[in-house]
Image (cartoon, rainbow, N blue to C red; front, top):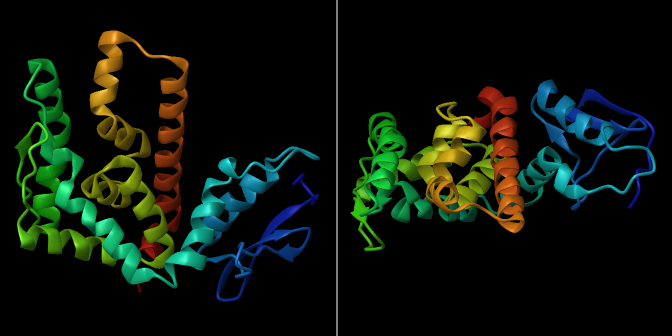
Length: 238
């Protein structure tokens, strides 16, 4: 579908802020009015649509904020408990808990980058997770998992849309929560989530397909981080 509108705008309405295309309020794929809680996020979403060149094809991969908002309104709102469960389950196998045994330089890098995040989760949520080496599964304490689940459940529907995507893409609920609370930027989340692969690239080089995949991952993580930052305090369930 090509760009079909000339102007974008934002106005207050329907209990929040709406994005207008040629004066008409946008709707989600499920025909839900696209209403967000603050003007900053609405303006950023409008900016995605404004930046599409005239008569160009609308590429949804460059409408990340729009997609996150629509998912929160259409899907999370009707399946909230399931989304919380699907997000929280990553705590049981969090990427940050599985450490390499060698080479020593990778072991050191994992400890320097990942351990402060686990220490933060222990202090912030009382969630002290156990470590494992290699691929050996380690069972996590029930109270730690419950605490991380509560952290996820504290998010509102729109924020949960981004939190789930962060968790799923990074493989780490701790990374996702750290981004939500401003402990990590989107770029830092990418570095933490892709540490092992980036280490291998440093040693052996990369290829165009891997580069393209990493660019997509970083773009997704940074979009989720931006979405949560734009939500501000509204990211939390009222």
